[in-house]
Length: 114
Length: 112
Image (cartoon, rainbow over all chains, first blue to last red; front, top):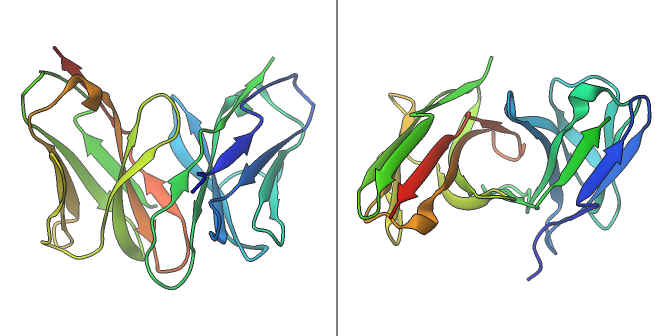
């Protein structure tokens, strides 16, 4: 079974630009969550999608947005990039149903802002 | 505010030693406690603990949750150099909502 796939693996952008990151969950998983990982703040929750609906959102500015498609694939968008957005962005998927199920992570997209 | 605190932040031991990693949490609407191992890339799932006092084991790794005292421990026996990694603890809030609150991680280094 293929794991969580994130593309691209690396991105370099400049301040003010926008970026879109993609995540394909494990087959059959309907919940997709996004996290930002930095050396200073660790892993922080951005948002979670289930059946194309955002169910939960972390404490990030509105420049961070996402969506989920009918095939459960998800995209995350960051607009007006700032230097502080440089981070590893991790996507995690789970079945997301009633029973407790762990989240499984992709390898992440490393975003560098110049 | 939800908080997960891990200790120690860093640990260096010799191969063959036994280590205990700690995780305390203050998470509203707490549902489960999860442990992950992160080497260079994706955090890899180790354990999910929902019930208090029931130990989960996988090979040389084991973990237990105390919901009264709000903490969990991860034990690794007979450590190997391949166990070197950052170990992350996370609290999961309420059933169904897949939000994890992570601790800072414990960086474990196993010297041969």
